[in-house]
Image (cartoon, rainbow, N blue to C red; front, side):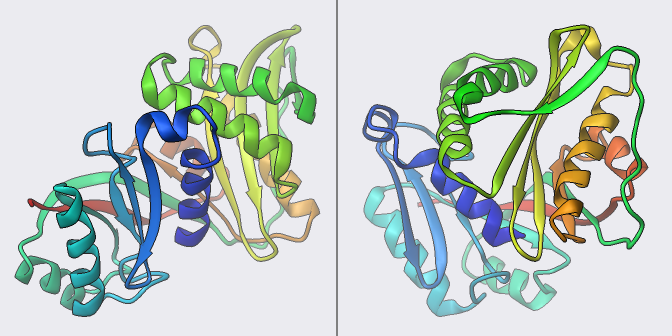
Length: 262
């Protein structure tokens, strides 16, 4: 789960001939951890470390490696820490090295039930998979659903466009109501797990059960390919979290932010 999420972010940051050099994006591995950085943008999604205690070791050697990397850049070290997967002892090691917890970023919801996803009927709603030729249309709609505009939106818009066009394991869906684009959602499918990303509903269409229908459609896509384990992120106890729970997900983890100043 954490490895797949980190790989998706790497794909968003790298490979764009215009945005990657403009923002000074870099993704390197230090001590087994993935270090995301930007020479132009401040702390946040494009400046942090992933994998501590999950797909990479939670060790002093690993921390030393990432601290050296960010010290050379003159930047603070920001780690995402998956709780309770990362043990108390490993969190204590962070504190001994000067890291301080900054709160919850996201909740992680996981679906492992053997019960097939249910289908939804929403008046006027049609959910269709996005063809490669419509990748840009999808990406622009998705960023609109999240508020649109700004640097982060542009990076993710162009990132989703590339991934939909080139990654066979990515399936994007648009939900239309009476022919009007209303909702988006992506499924990242791998042999043993699938991640639900980029789920948004346009403001004028909210409150009709459309997000639940979009979640169910993406589950059905992965289910038809033999996947039985799904995950998705949301803001803590948001409406999205409730909708995921309605579709069989359980809130299993939280991602906390730990920071060490330069």
